[in-house]
Image (cartoon, rainbow, N blue to C red):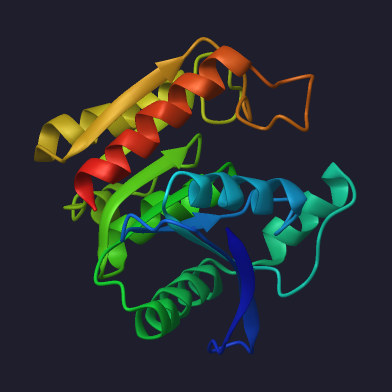
Length: 221
C-alpha cells in the first residue's frame, strides 16, 4: 500500500484528499468522509484499511487542514462548514480522482458528520454507485426521494443523535418511494466504529459492519 495527497480546487478554495492506494487493486474506489473531528489519523487509518482490502480510498479534507482537539472545537467546525461547501468538496474530489486514477464508479461512506454527507451526496451527486453512511443525519424528503444509489444505512440503537425516530423516518420514506436502501441497526452507541474512542467503540458491531460494507462495495462497484 502507498499513500499520497491529492490536491484539488473547490468553489471556496483549494484543499486536499488523503489517498490510500492498494498494492493489489481490485479496480474499485471508495470516497471516505470524515467525522466532525476532521481528517485525522483515525480516518486515514480507515482509508488504509480499505486499501488493504484492494480499494483505492479517497478521503477529502472538508475542513481544509484543520483538525479538532476536543468536542467543542469539532462542534464549532461542523457548524461553520456550509452544506454546499462540503458537497462541492466531495464533488471536486471525485472528479479529480476520476481523472487521475481513471475510475468510472465510486462508492461513498462516512461516519457521523461524514455519514450525513455520504447519504446526501448519494442523493444529489453523479458518479456514485453505492453508499454506506454510518449514523449520519437524514436529508429532507424532497432530497431523499431522488435517491437511486444502492445504500446501506448503518445506525445504532443506543444513539441519542441519529435516534430511532430519525431512522424510522428514513425507513418510512424508503418504503414510500421504494428507495434502494437497506437499514441495518446494531445494539451499540453513536460512533461505535471508532476504535480510538473506547467509551463507545463496539468491536463486534464494528467488525460486522466492516465485513458488510466491504462486501457491499465489492458487489456494487
